[in-house]
Length: 312
Image 1 (cartoon, one colour):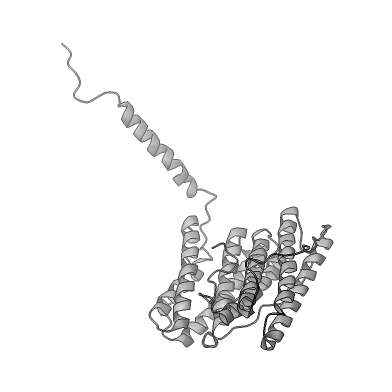
Image 2: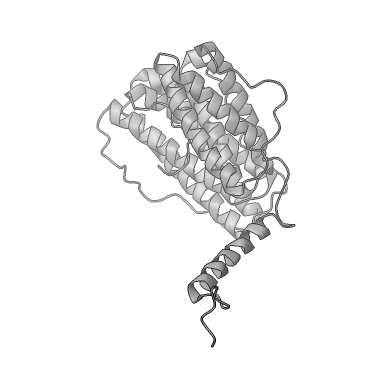
């Protein structure tokens, strides 16, 4: 007489499928640690640590400047953490004790200056997506500096010049064409608003218009050198809302600077050339700082955009 075995000699179909699924899941896990995995420390690690420290320190302080820094640096930390976690590379070893959070607005001023320089220095060499994100963070730090004398104002953006020998493939050329379109629009905006602003703003309007004319010319020269035909300005532009007074004029200028920021960030996202990235970064920071100054004039909230050029 043969009875049923106390243990099945064959695995059930459910057990087989379950083990098969686990085996399938193990393949990408193993691949992630294979030869293609970069085990070098993530260069964004120090930026993330600094942003988290700044946000924590600013949150513990009082005042409008501290609140602005806390909000912006928390946004920087969140963006950086998402990217650092995505690649899951080793965190850089920190030399010495952990940094103390800034305990005063003067401390925030110094930290912002350091964070901006650190981010600017990474932009030329990072992969495209990371370069754009870090450029936006650098511009955000520059905007915070511009927003208040207590935060130091910071240095003006570097010169926007034609980069020598920058390759201009089709994708990059399209991005430069978009930057050119934004510059055409900005030149038109500055011409329009001059009729609505008090005489006290004449200098700011003149300087802003001159900078955008220079950038327009830089774009045209880059495109021509790359064998492309630069696009001309539109016959007319329609503001998002009618310009009827000084307040709406200032708001339109801030919008034009925001559009220029987004266009130049697009150039960074679509080139690997370090010199062209530097040119685009300078343009992005310049527009972020000018936009901040105009936003302060008409009472926008927040005054400084955390990550200029990024979609909101």
